[in-house]
Image (cartoon, helix red, strand yellow):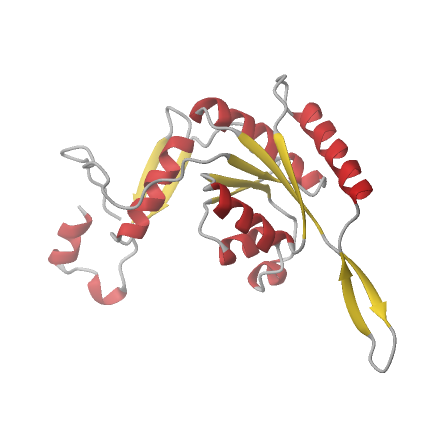
Length: 219
């Protein structure tokens, strides 16, 4: 492992425009989604961003019988949406001690797909979601909604554990020196605590180790 001190600050970023939209809180009203609210409130104060709560309802599926039994998705009715909106408001008031009511978007469909699409439309700067407690096999197979959002969208996703109550203080940023990794780092920096310690990490393939050219690039 090698460490280095930067001799000069990072140059101005000239790549893709950083997201400027709201923060999105993904909530299904579960205990896991509770963890997203306090962090969203802290980030909103730090970045002066608006916040929207996104809640995706699975459509009803009604079998139609005939020669073939075909499941037909039915749109969620207005009454169900009104009930969900009231529950989301109660969840925010329970977890966030500030008077401003966040906007809500209640959508019918598959949670991972609809949340990432909403983030794309709004140019959201971040999706904040509670981290589910799934077995490792389910995580690897992409069964968790957070993984689906990472697979389907390009909006940064912050998966929050219930123990995370303050902005991140120690952060590891993986880099391969590409524009993509620089973009990811610059998106992440405004979301950290003001006194956060950031470590840039590059893992070189085996054939690069010991090669002075690659070591110089990393420095």
